[in-house]
Amino acid sequence: MPTTEPAPGSEPEYQELPFTEHLRAKLAEACSGRPETLFALIDGARVPKLWVMLRELEIEHVPLFRESPKEDIIQVTPFLARVDPAGLMPAWFTMQRPALETSMFLTAEAGLKDLLTHFRRYLLIRDAAGKAVYFRFYDARVLPAFLEAATPAEARGFFGAVRRFFVWQPEAATKEKQVVFRGWSLAGEAQALPLPPAPDVHEPFQLRPEMEAAFSKAAMEGYDRRCAGYLRERHGALLGKVSDQEVLAVVNRAKRIGPELGLPSGRDATRLAELLVLGFTDDMKRRLSEAPPQDRSRELEKMRDAAASRGGQA
Image (cartoon, rainbow, N blue to C red; front, side, top):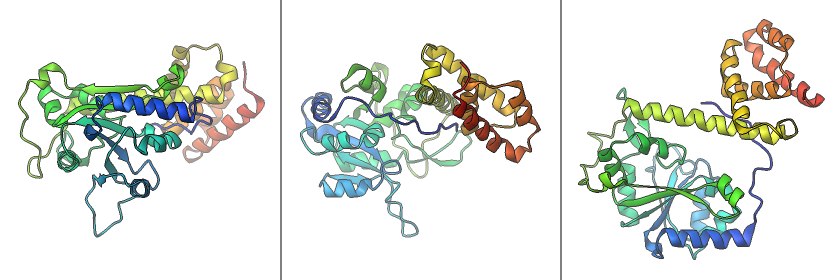
């Protein structure tokens, strides 16, 4: 999957106390003032020492992955935790924005243990070919594509007792200077359906080809947005008057040219997009084509660094 190099200075500009109070208010609104119905799915693989934080703050929580005597998985397991809008978690989210960005909130008419049982049924599923795979439904980059491709019956089964999933939108929050969430609820057609039999080890949930296509599309669109944002962060002086559509066109051109030059990886596509902004000459293209295949990625990086040191071409 394509990736981008980290962009510096991506933290929102609005700061601590106002943000914390806004977050508390939005969470209280989301659960209609009933904190017992508010939970969060937090990815331990993306939040260092998450289990330590949950323990130290004395927040009720359970790991989604079962303990294994063969390996220590505590550092990568997602956790299901209760969230009290008036408690310590909103303040912690304020100080740990990456944790907020990677958390999936939900409201549900069920207890922690019942939700744990439900979600564990969707951790190990089968892909469209029947192969057992782990399903990162708790990832905000995965859930929207899944729900978009799910049938009403599939969505009804997945939601179970959950009434709504929602995630923080950092870009919109920064622009509007307030806390912004994006949420998903069951459509009316799905709400009217009876709850289907739950998946189990004998009949696990199975993805359909349409779902896998939706995942691939969402992943590529996510890469395009991240890469375009990265280009603006690194080369804002050159892209100041360039429209978002034009920046995305540069990204798409880099994805097209890369494989032609034997540079299929996402990181290479990102560096090539930078060179297109800085000035990608015919001579550079020739040198890349003539370089040994195993050296082309490094040669591309050297070209990018040299062009960046010169300030690029307007």
